[in-house]
Image (cartoon, rainbow, N blue to C red; front, top):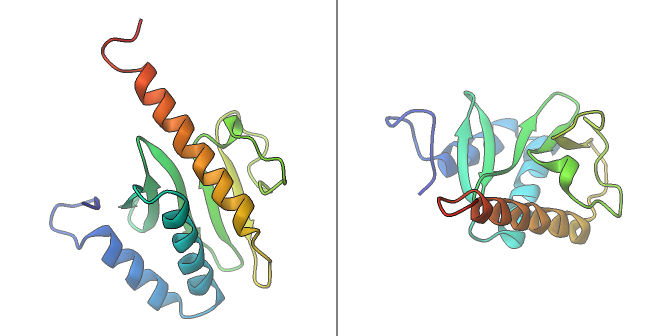
Length: 138
């Protein structure tokens, strides 16, 4: 089940649907597209709604966010600095030790195959970390 900031709030999937409709421009279309890509690459990902309006996808920990701004849709990967990015998708937040982001602007082409690979790598990293950090870890 999708999480929300409040137990009284609508399920996260409904809030994300509403955000996409509310944007009603290229940003909504882009958010919907990356959402489809995420669900294709990580079918077990859970949708969450955090920080009063940010879509978040998680699988054994946070994978990425889908923030929308006036001139960009930003996918921020929680552990992006630890992910392989052979095609150079990451183009923002490159100076950090942990996160990396992809800023998508109007008219940008999205390399879906590379993005799916990046999402799958994020899932694998999270799952590997959750096994190591379990109660039997030494």
